[in-house]
Figure 1 (cartoon, rainbow, N blue to C red):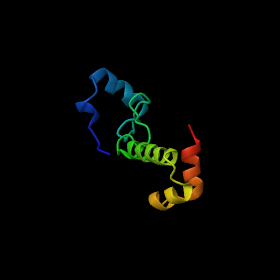
Figure 2: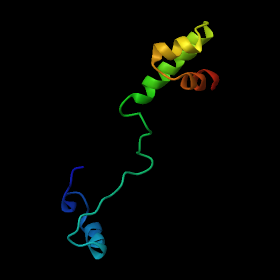
Figure 3: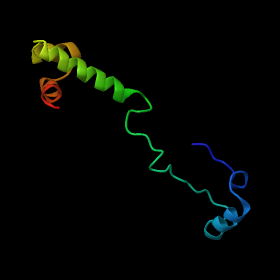
Figure 4: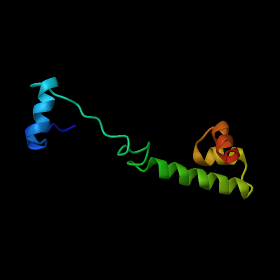
Length: 87
């Protein structure tokens, strides 16, 4: 996290208002809910897992067994079952 001097970003009136509550202290301003990304969107993990699960479902529908998928994707049988039997 990078610190920024409030003088360089806030208008004078707003800075004076903030100083009524906090003066000379560090304040953390969280990201807004609208700007927040969901899990895996930044790293690409979400897309990777969606593609992997799609491939597992496709292979299962082509006749590959749960045991074979478990070995191929290094997942437990229960994990494979959750993937292939979910929507």
